[in-house]
Image 1: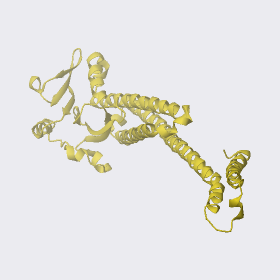
Image 2: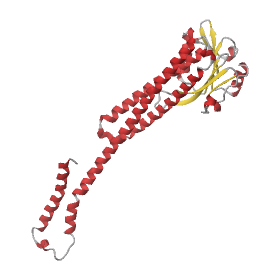
Image 3: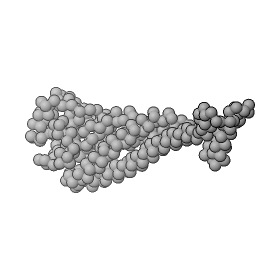
Amino acid sequence: MIRIHRRGESGCRTLDPAETPIVDDDVLWVDLVSPTREEELSIEAALGGLALPTREEMAELEASSRLYRENGATYVTVDLLHRGDEETPVLDPVTFVISPGPLVTIRYFDPRPFAMMDAALAREDRLCTTAPALALHLFEMVIDRTSDVLSRSVARVEGLGQSIFADRSRAASFEPFINRLGRARLANARLEQSLAGLSRAFVFLGLDERIETDAEAREHLRSLVRDARSLTDHNHAVAASIDFQLNAALGLISIQQSSIIKIFSVAAVAFLPPTLIASIYGMNFDHMPELAQPWAYPAALVAMGISAVAPLAWFKRRGWL
């Protein structure tokens, strides 16, 4: 699908390609959403033969495939988050092409910042200026949305931390918390990947002469770089918190398991002397004179009882119980 954003007297309007030329002086943004090969070729022809990357090329991770310049256009491919309201957001690539004409974006999903940008263009005429300025405003929406996703992740991690440390007796039931911490760490890693790609993209965009020679655009880009760096630092702190909570949960489980093993160890030691006494008197030798005495059986029981209680009293005195 091709979505054309065209300047008008009352701001930018979103038009169907059948209603307007695909590219003219008033077209500000061409948004390709899951385009077919025929749609890609039509845009390439309208842009004077400017080559657009395919979906397979967008998925490549090499910097040379994601950040490059060609025929006067700057190509930037970044991984953006979507389904950010879920526990584990999804990452997919989006390509931004800042051409001598309109801004061209290529995507195969529907990230929230694009809908936010559509709404902003409809109500704010100041955004309908140039393609580079529009690209920076769109990146600002991306940073805002990433910040929202990070805030939700922080809230989830803090809630998990309070649950983990609320009651140590629940250590045996920590498995659900550990699973959720694992998902939080995965979300954190995807945030890190997206922010790292955005930071590299912002540095590369600073080399575009259309931004480099525009003082307002340069300052806007510097602001985006600062925001991305700030979010990256915050995300690192969240990663450290997740790792700490995961280690704490595993430590509490280990402590509880050690306590259980200690109880079994103490019980084994306590019952060892009575077992020894019972074994001696179960050997059935002929010359065991006390066996013929009437007090022999009660004496054996008393000896076994004392030999069991004495180790327990000693352990308790030493603070091992």
